[in-house]
Image (cartoon, rainbow, N blue to C red; front, top):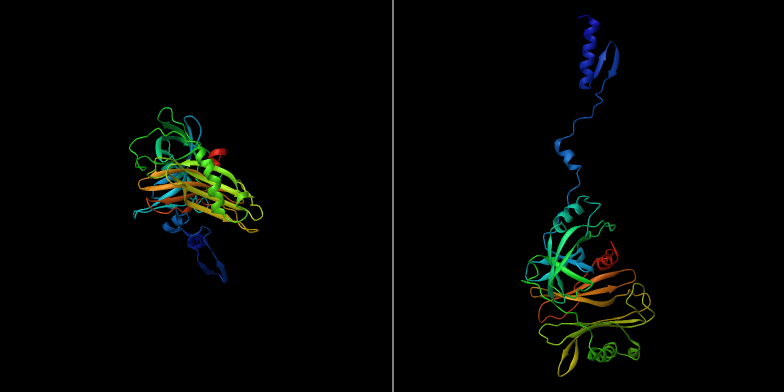
Amino acid sequence: MSNMHRALAVVTMIAASGCQVDWGGGHIALENPAPPPAPADAEASLEPEQVPLPVEPLLYAVGLDRPGHARVTPLARLAGGDGALRLGEISIPATEDPSFRSRFDSAFLAPGTELDLLARGNRLGSVLLEGREDSSAVVCPSIAVGRALVVPNQDLPAIAFAVPRGQSGFASAARVPAASPTRSMTVAGPVLAERLIGGDRAFLARLQSLSPVTLSGDTLAGMAATWMIDDSLAVGPPGRDAVSLFFMARFEPTRGFIPIWEELRRYADGEAKEALEFVDWIQLGTHRLDILRQYDASSVRVAVSVTDPGEDRAISWVEPSGCAALDRLAGGS
């Protein structure tokens, strides 16, 4: 091999290794253009970390817009484990974990999933999920469609609720007829409203919502009602010096209707609205869930009272703002 060939061979080897060389009085720096190989764990660290799925069973809201057809969305986590029952938030971390929605839907909204359908304190039947609708609500759970399987001649509400099959505590479904307000409710309502609101403006209160409601151990229905002064059951600010009253009352044969739960709001200028309307109640084991709509300045959210027998009622959980599950079910996702 000639001297020139040997020199070229040396330069080629050095270039491959990326070194500096002094040759014939000149200084040449040769670098390998290929980047250094990444460690095996560096590539794995570039993948976004997966957010864990809920481990608790879920409470679902169900829209029953026509016979046999159901639209279903997860509403809350049924947390607890210490004998108590607490509702927990469900959110979709789309930015932090793009895979979360598909994994969540596969776990909780998969076709073939069967849920216990609950309303009016009983199990009305089942919901069999068949597929998922597209959802434009980025941080909210998806909506699934399915079939409502209920006992014959069942009068279904527009909104019901559901839990995973077997979680409700009901061994079988029952036919539960719908109830209408009685004359005694319409007569007693204004008297209770004026007494609970008090003051010289109480007579201005107007009835906004009245629903019969079954209370534990009672043979006669109680009532849940909303009365207002300069306010309404709609999104938007209340009027000046508005008053909003929600109450639940039990009927006692010797005393008439006795209030057992009241939520009174008196609004000063600029104070946030919080008007309440009864939706339904469901039973999960020993736990009773009274479910309300809460109207504020910009949205309608679900509010829930979770109680056991003998406990006083109070709002214990409110749906996070931005999802409005019941509105999404009624008007599309």
